[in-house]
Image 1: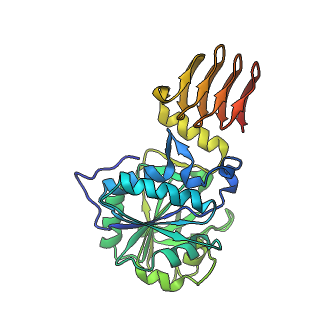
Image 2 (image 1 turned 180 degrees about the vertical axis):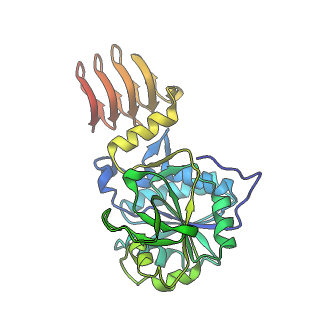
Length: 315
């Protein structure tokens, strides 16, 4: 995730990473790990988000947890050592609270505006510029958006005022100037916490209820890359894009077979003699047995000897 700390540290220095979700769209990978810990180029998504936030000087961070929370807790303990100058707090949800309820509970102690980011997206958005625009415009909420027609759910009028959220495609308000895609990144003022109910809620649905009472703005991002890691195919494509036809983690794995195209090899992964791995992702300790040939695959467990498969997931 690209950043520009040296040029523009963010004036907003707190953030909440939403990481409590069940990750049902990424099943079966999320049977093993919460989505925020699913590895991208051998690092958990949570690591990449913390690195990006830190690069902008955003050092006060809350991460919420519910699904496989014990694994997330263990990983956070390690990440605190990786980012020792950050204050990283866990907000544990015994009952899942949704994006709105999670923010209501987790962001209580923030002073001033704060970022809310979905822990399952990858973006090179300039967080400093977004924060400065939010403050300059005196907005209550600023949502990052970009032009992706297939995912367009944010109705925007002239002046970047948001006038609708999740409206059906056939519902086009007369003042709508554009229908854009939300990135899963927003800046929120503390006053909005009072608009969120206690218990489970959806933050987008709650913001949609107050569009007439508060200044809710869109921040059109010039990001060149954005990915919502919401499915197996999206997860695969994110790794493929970032690997850029390289082999990642070669020094972490035991490779006695062949690799063609890109590969991401986790710690302790094994490619046995006579096996061929083409454009694939191997999680830590994954094994491709002798003579197997896989292409465009995600391997968590093992691939049986002499098997051949393409566009598949192996547990």
